[in-house]
Amino acid sequence: MTRVQFKHYHHHHHHPD
Image 1: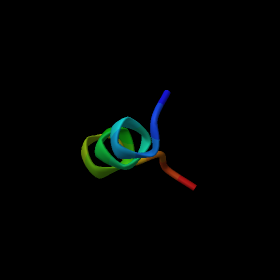
Image 2: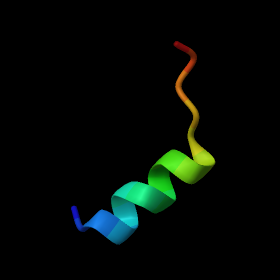
Image 3: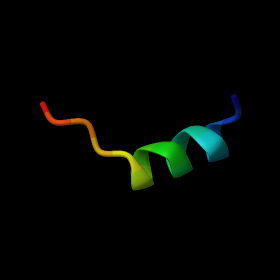
Image 4: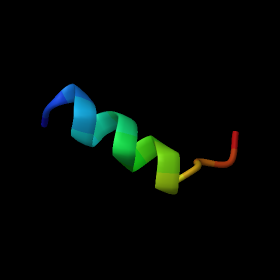
């Protein structure tokens, strides 16, 4: 997984802490 995909993933999938 590239950094762009990783960033994109986190942008749309926020994990409840």
